[in-house]
Image (cartoon, rainbow, N blue to C red; front, side, top):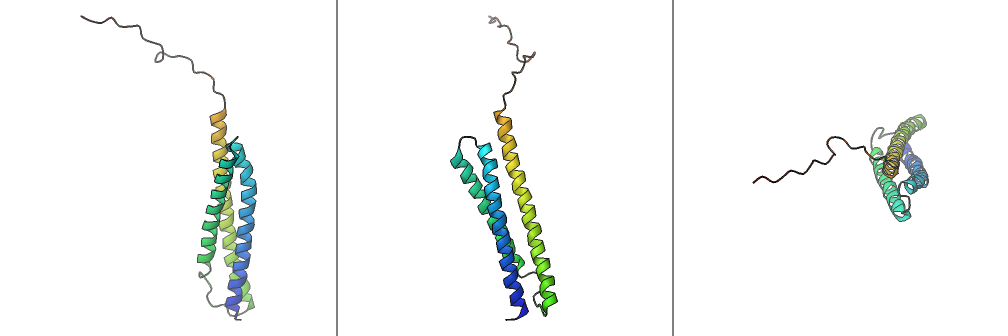
Length: 140
């Protein structure tokens, strides 16, 4: 087996393992956020959590597959294997980190929106625009 194939195999194993680990972590932690957002509707929280995780996997696994061909196509020796792997896996880690931050941001927006909707609001005092107008006598 030549070094290019070894590089591809190691890259795929590392990238797929990291993607699955981050996806499972997001799924577990995201469930808590969504349960808070959809207070009494656990089925909806689970469904939204599952959809977010599926989207995360699709984007990241697609990136891992596309990134396989980019860069060093001919890896000649062991130092180049490490160079290529550090570049490819490092980029995948950065993409996973960005996707993680995007997921946390989206979940936090859901949570904050739900909190704002559920907060009691004080009544608005009447203004000149809300005071009823006296009835107008019909003109003959």
